[in-house]
Length: 180
Image (cartoon, rainbow, N blue to C red; front, side, top):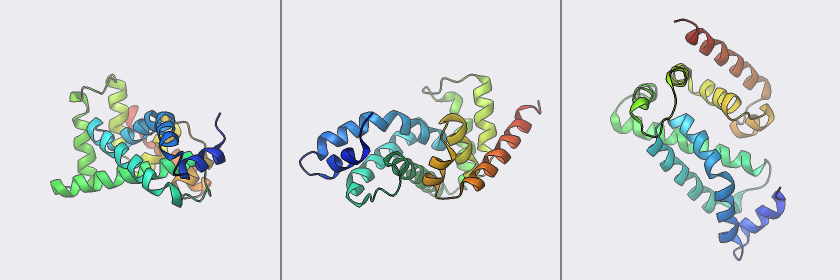
């Protein structure tokens, strides 16, 4: 286990920044990829958002104040980059964010990087029907198994609100999955 404060010091030190940054990539790239992928759905978009996330981290590490865990800060940046990418793509296509997400879900079966079965596809479609905030909360809790405290740091909202969002999202998904 790494000492986070020492690791952050290495990330901020010009002499050790490159090596520490490579270590950061190894530690978090896969976990952040899957977090982003659950938001943007599409593999290529996830790769773009992940790259943007790490560029932003590299450029902004000196501004990291340590008020949250490093991983919470990374997740917040990745979440924001994912939402920005969805907004940008939807605007470019002149459609709503919801329509963009629906298209992404409908194209999921054709995605060579999607290895899920029919049940996983149905779950992804159910998640896509949720409002954006509930999607984020559900994905972070259900798939990433994040604690409400960590989610609170990432999404900058109260644990109580997150618990309520997760409960509502779970009930909606359960209703969709059991309706057939």
